Amino acid sequence: MTDNGRVLEMTREEFEELVGEALDRIPAELTRLMDNVAVFVEDEPDPKDPDLLGLYEGTPLTERGEWYAGVLPDRITIYRGPTLRMCDNRADVVAETEVTVVHEIAHHFGIDDERLHALGYG
Image 1 (cartoon, rainbow, N blue to C red):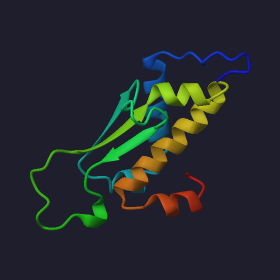
Image 2 (cartoon, one colour; image 1 turned 120 degrees about the vertical axis):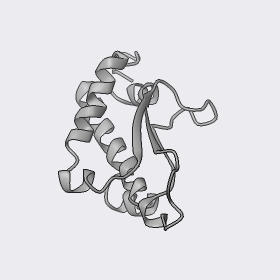
Image 3 (tube, helix red, strand yellow; image 1 turned 30 degrees about the vertical axis):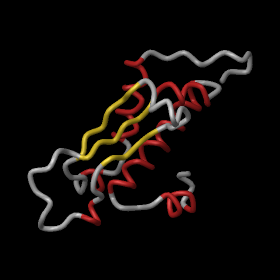
């Protein structure tokens, strides 16, 4: 929320661009390892968790076995509304979006929240 108490404004398209830019900053050696995962931008999370910035849904790479075939892609969702409400300016949104994207991709690689917090991606 900005200093004047207003929620920062950013169009869905602008926010999607930031998510795309954050994905582009992921090192190529990691993105090559990502498998069967799609990234989406939504305006708001489930009302039960209104402050959720991102969500990973799927089977982490570390848990996939020979049985893993023909399944729908894992889903990473980045939420625009909560991100804009917690940030004071565009630079904050850029930084928070990058942290959230990395956080959710890390879940795809099987890294849990405790380890992510220790690495500064809480």
